[in-house]
Amino acid sequence: MPDGTPPLPNRTLKTPQALHAAGLLPAEALPGAEVVARRYSISVTPAVAALIDPADPADPIARQYIPDPAELVTAPHELADPTADAPFTPVTGVVHRYPDRALLKPLLACPVYCRFCFRREAVGPDGGLLSEAELDAALAWFARTPAVREAILTGGDPLMLSPRRLGEILRRLAALPHLDLLRIHSRVPVAAPGLVTEALAAALETGKPLYLCVHANHAREFSPAAVEALGRLHRAGVVLLGQSVLLRGVNDSVDALEGLFRSMLRARVKPYYLHQLDPAPGTARFAVPVEEGRALLRALRGRVTGLAWPTYVQERPAGGGKVPLGPEYSPNEG
Ligand code: SF4
Image (cartoon, rainbow, N blue to C red; front, side):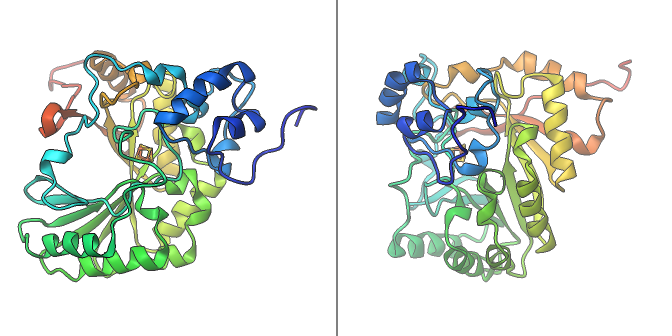
């Protein structure tokens, strides 16, 4: 480490001052970051801080987590609830948009707060933990809705719950005969791999298939510790899928996407979805046009194994659900 470089932090950085002290935010950026922090949560775990190259002003890891004054500018097309969870919420903590599956959001806290998050108006360290009564009501909704075959735990990040708490929720869901499978969406394996303990892995074993969708957007997020955490989950019988967001300045090149998907496969994670950015407030700096996204995927075709190929998807407005974006091919294409 060069002289004058601050030591790597051993605790999570939650304020602009803490980011500055760790060498991840220059002094001139502090005032703007302070204003952003009044509106949106900040969290950079030690594992993520260790991945950032502070000497690189275009670092693709930093770009995902370090606040920027551009977040305070809401473009005309941006919406506070871009995926329209609210109209599809039958009881607190549940989102039922599709006939055969429903979301359960047991908490709204995350290990990190992504600057492009589609739920950025809702997530944060202080809110969203379902009370005992709310959780009972949410689980009762699953019990009386037999058309739902899959429970998808999201948030927030469900792996932020204690293994005991998460295990209890999973066991109660797994006991419902009409639920075929459980799914968890999480950033924890890459952003806070130390939380993936043997106790957590054991808590995920319920006797029903469990899919874990790991959210990662850059190859470097698959650190040795992250790969080890994912290996622990794999050994516990968890099926690992990858979901990513196409982000300007993070993974908007063929090389970056190839690196990301190959890193996933090396970590036993099957790339599942590549999401078009949802228009949450103040996220326009991350937007990549759909045509550019299609061209990137087209360029990847043939260059990487089909196993590395995710489905490129976009959420329709007003809660209309996901649609695949292609690219389309005809059998006669050269
Ligand atoms: S971890 Fe997921 S829910 Fe949490 S801030 Fe990032 S994108 Fe949003």
